[in-house]
Structure formats: C-alpha cells, structure tokens
Image (tube, rainbow, N blue to C red):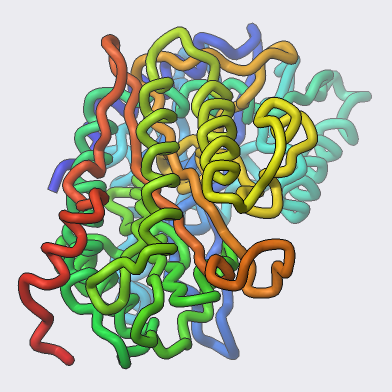
Length: 444
C-alpha cells in the first residue's frame, strides 16, 4: 500500500515554516481518544492537520515547529513508552521512536509538556495554533502563556501575537502532491470496486444496510480501516434525503437506490455517488431524471480545468438542470428568470461539489479576496449534481414524486484539464443495467 514518505512530511513542515513570521512558534495538537460508551472508545483517527505534518498516528501528542531554532526546528511531545499499557492498548513509539521513525529533531514525554513548552514559547513574538477548534486546547495554551506572564518581573517575555495557523496549513493541503494523488487514485479505485459490488448485489427485497455491508466489506478487504464518512444508502423516497444515513429501509421493486459512500486509504478519502434501479431496469420517469442529471454532470466536468473559477461547474449544472426541468414540464417559464428566482432550489439545493482530500469535505477557502477561487493543477474536488423530487411535493405530477438521483465523481485538476479518479464506476444507464443483469451476488 502506498504511503507518504518521510521526505514529503519534512517538505510539508519546511514549506509551512517558510510562511511563518520571524521569531514565531507553531503548536499543533493531535486528536484525542473519544469515549463511545462507558469504557469503550470510538476507533481513533488522527487529526488531519497533525497527520499532514507529522505522519504520527497516536493520540495525546503535540507537534511544535520553531523556524530557525538551532537545537532543532521540529519537536514532538508523545506518550512515553510503557510496557504495561502497551500490553493493553498497543504499541507506543515513545520519544525515541518519534525521532527515529517520524523525523523529529527532538521529542519529549507528553507528561513533561507543562514544564518544557512554556520555555520554548518564551521570547517568541507570535504563536500559531488551531484557534477556536478545541476549547480544552485553547485553555491549555493560555495556561502556558500565563506561566510566562507570571515571570515577567524576572525578565520573561510572553508572546505578543496569536495567529490561526489554519489558513497557511489549509492552503498547503489544498494542492495535492504526486504521492497524495497516487493514494487518492487507489482510494477511488477501491471504492469504485465497492460500488460495482453493491450494484451487482442489489435486488428487490434486500435491506439498505446489506448494500452498505457490501461497500464496507470491499473497502476493508482492500486495506481501508474505516469509511471516509457515514454511508448513505437510500432507496425510493429515502434517496430524496440528502444526508440519509439510517440505511434501515427495505428495497422495493421499481425503486431507485442512491448510494453515496467511499472508503479511506492512508488518511485520504474517496467520495462516490451512484443511483441505479433496484430491479436492474430504469422506468420512463426514472430514466428521464437520470439522463438529465448525467447530462448536467458531463457539462460540469467540462468546466473543471485550470483557470476556471471554482463556481463554474455549479453555474453550469444549475443551467442544465433548470433547462431540463422545464423540458420535462416540472418547471415552467424562462430559464434565465427561473435561475434568477432560484426556482431550481426545491429540486437541487446543494452546491455541485466540494474539495476532497484528507477530509471528505476538505479544507481550503472557496473564495479568496471575495472572488471565487481559481482552479489549479493538484486540486481535487467532487462533481455531484442531483435532482430530488420530494414525495410530498404536490406542485409536480405524481409520477415524478419520490425520485432522487445524484451522480458524484472525484476529479483531480491537471495541467490540461482534469482526471476523473472514479471513472471505473459505471454511470451510463446501459452500463448500469448490463452490470446489474450480468449476475447477482451469491450472498442473497
């Protein structure tokens, strides 16, 4: 399995420190373990910012960056080695491992941080941190600052400025390296296989959660430790609920099934949505809506290229969908007027995509200086138009009600245009029907 190299982690830290102010320090906390119930924890996943800079996968840690420090610019505070706890909870790198395995210039036990970190902060003009994200960390940071302030009469100099490091760090994360793109391509291919498996396994009478199991089984067998997000498996009217995650419905003959799911590899997410007929055949109304959404997606994909604003795929999607809804008789009026009045909103109420990376809704500003951000090579985004006609929408003919369709792909911006990372999942209606009627899973 591909992994980010030590050299790339070091390059990320170097590029971040190049942007930091003179005589500054950055303090980035790891994620904490979270209780699920009683003494059972949720599976631990490292904080994405911390992982991006360090590659260190344990909780109860801090990364400290001090540009220009002669004794070492990169320091880790980690859990100490503890053979007894390691019997119960697993391997710990310890301070020595943090240096040997993760490239820290120096490392200390986390239990010593209150003694050591204020000394590293003292005399620094600016402190960078993730502000306003974790109240406990914000309080801890001010406790360290107050320790320094209490010694002002002895000549101690507390930091003067405090800055959120998120902007600097998120701009770095927005542009993916070759190593990152290679991992994301593997995650996309894995999730593509999972979606094809679910299509093949589907038949009327099974439960939504059984298709979820097909997706997650395929991803875990390929090395994914957990889903990139909670899977959406919505059949019939459930497909009209954007974030439907109950997945408890029974899939009935004649319904559409919308699956929005993806696995994660090496902390990089995939995010795919496909919509298909439960019985392997689209009916007339389902096919009409599906064809419209697919047309909108192809048009939006044409807008993914360097130099175009991020909003261009969405604007194109809105125009194609609005015109198509007029042609189908679901909307009536002049297309430009309908767009201005946002008459499409009851049927398409979300943006056409989002950034994708270590987080499924990845970091990075969509606007810079009040203007939509321009697409650049190395950016990865989703393109996911949809049409959702509520079963309760009495403004449309009954034959359309309860149809929900979304088609989503992961797309990398390249020098010449774009690369659809998830292209291995069928989305042409004939291809979907051929896959579904070519053989059923033996599990049902």
